[in-house]
Image 1 (cartoon, rainbow over the protein chains, first blue to last red):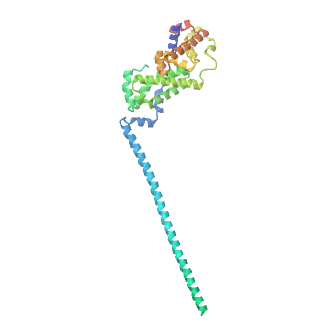
Image 2 (cartoon, rainbow over the protein chains, first blue to last red; image 1 turned 90 degrees about the vertical axis):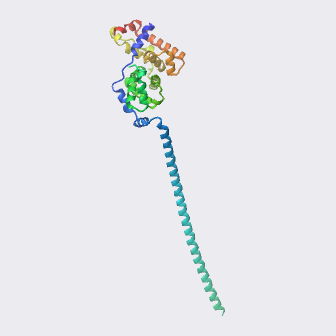
Amino acid sequence: MNQEMEQGLKEALRRKPAPEGFARRVMARLPEQAAAAREMPRTMRPRRAWLAVALAAGLALAAFGGVRYQQYRQGQEAKRQLLLALRITGEMLTLAQNQVAGLNDTAGVGERRGDQ
Amino acid sequence: MREEPAQIEDTLRAAQQGSRGAFAVLVESHQSMVYSLLVHMLGEEAVAEEIAQDVFLELHKNLNAIDSPLHLARWLRTVASRRGIDEVRRRRFRSTYGIEDLPEPQIEPRVRDVLLSAQVRRMLERLPARHRAIVVLRYQEDMEPGEIAVHLEMPVATVKSTLHRALGMLRRACQRTGLGGREFSKREAV
């Protein structure tokens, strides 16, 4: 019975043809990007990979440099505004000092006249 | 369609270089094997086709890891079998009642002969996932236990004992449902 059974199993488990259009449906599901990547010859892949890495690194450096330059420009502008503010404050202080000095002079003259 | 390793060597290389046409030929060369493995394991044609397509998409991703036509066939068998086992377990294809509980066929002997293969496949669907995979690889692909062990990454002794147990379960189911030795021998008349 074993041989008969094994033969029966072989009969029942014979390969069946895949459904019509099976390969076409598989090909339709293939991602285009993967196909495009596969088009690249194998020997080119490492060089292209390094190129991509270098490009990415360059872009990162440029972005970093841009940010740093922007920070430098902002710092310079802040410094300029601070110096301007200090200068204006200094001028105002000088003006106030002069006015105080003028008041003192006027008061001194009045006192001397009163003494006479 | 059995693949001819010598004939598909060039096709494999062309597919690895990016030829979509060559890959389509590889699919056509192996689709019957992959689809049959899955349909015999799962018993549902639509599910089997969907998973078979997934197997070929996975092949496309891993095409450069394939070093020969024989490796290609082995890779496809292995991946299809594992996907089949996973799917059986995931979908709980194995029914809550066992192979021993199959009902007596209520059909005439002549019709029973005609439906013998379908009946065998139905009984196969009652087997646990791994038993089923081993029986399908053994009788569909005509593989020796040693080869099955390599494909499924399990000890040869385990393959042999699992196959023995699976055949025992099928034999008992055959006897119970009246599909004994005589009915099996009638297959030639079908």
